[in-house]
Image 1 (cartoon, rainbow, N blue to C red):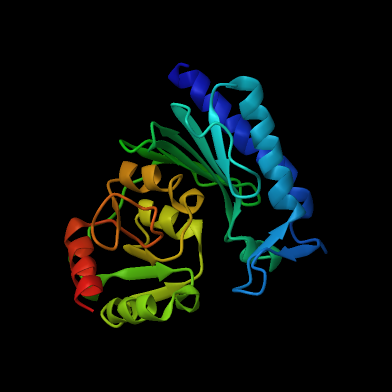
Image 2: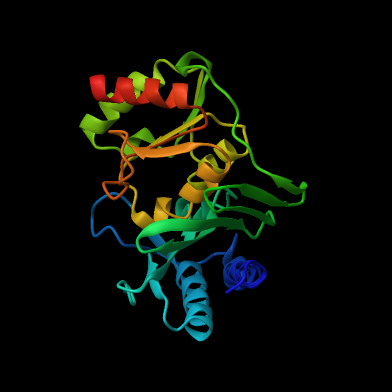
Length: 261
């Protein structure tokens, strides 16, 4: 699979997912709650239609590859290459008619993320990265993504989806960082990481993430020159507590606060 072939394929994945999603956006669609009485966790027909479309294309083109997605059972997780799909990251924004959502498409090789894309079909933006570089394509043109420098928390714009989603102990630690930053902002889901890669945000702190929430975004952030770790500073993101930064000095300071409490 050459570089050109791969680029064409992931663009097709993004296109078919967008074609499945957009007929549902800002309509009176039905919403199910997957939480079973816990924190509201919505899913819609758009989520399922998009993931089915992407899975069908992957099976047809790369039958030996595995697939890990949010809405359907895993397939071929022992394969060398496994696709990681989140058809609508930011479903709560989606059902509210807000455009801060996107389709996440990631590819892992032997468990390590090697490519990621965030596609927002309504705005027509695509953010991609392979860990070495990251790019933007959309109404604003085609350009390389680069994080910006930020010397410390006192200068930082920080984002999280919502502190209310955090367990009490994690929220208390997070709030110690929030008190120190220049500007905290809530919401954004996958867009927060893409804005970090684009140099508009300096820090993202999250908890309770699934692998399909973060693995496709990690190569975009690191490809733009950023850092993605768990709260302890390690590379294992399976625990769901994630820190992403555009500057190592800022990252180290945020980790220090999170671990000092």
